[in-house]
Length: 339
Image: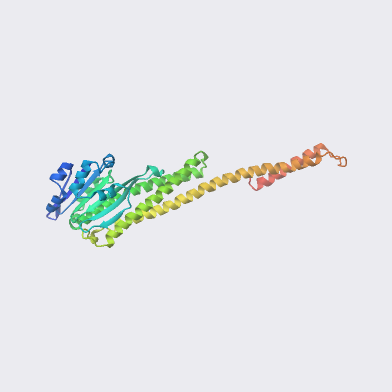
């Protein structure tokens, strides 16, 4: 596990005095326990990044148990963070608990998706972020905090939380861009009639559609968290410092998802129409083959009968009539563009 601290120690001449560093579990328990740090700073942000193998038997892992003791986090809360749960915001008087999801990778095969669930435990002037994997580039995020000192000074914890959440949303744009490129490629393949890849095309469309539904559910739940943060008065949150673009970004992603979903539906219709057109052409050829042989078979059947009352008829005239009837049928199908 890795720990990163971002501490706003003090404000000197309208400029924040900031400390940023990494530390060990031992340091966290002794020198930089959040309960002690919060007494000597304006606000602080602690990021706890866990490795996947560390949470396999978390209730038997002594390091995990020590961490939860230091941070005063219950085992039930930790379980909610590391297991797949719906994003939400809960108020527990002393602290606020936020579950938020970030989509890093959502390929055409839904089984290969990569999502990060992040748990934020928010006190009056302390934010603790716990997650598995690295959903955001912390150095980039901390540099962003440093570039906006006034917002950090006045917004405090609210600014830390909302910017962190906004950074969690950013990878979703990359995922949607990837799907747009996939849809453009599929459209080109359908229009150029690449029949060798028709099974791949259909499986890809189905995979993207399922992944898209999954992403929309995540975005809608994330938006509910943001709206609850904006509409309800929490002691830890200054509503005036929640950036309006936070909700706008999620709304924009939902709108793009709806557009992409329509594109995928149109591509599936194009695919099935193309397959139906191919089937119609095959049936038209069979119909042409049947029709062109009907009259010759009829003539051969009539004049091939052994009947003493049947008038004599020249063999060559029969051949001429057969060929002529076949030519007429061919012209009719050709004019109707069925062959």
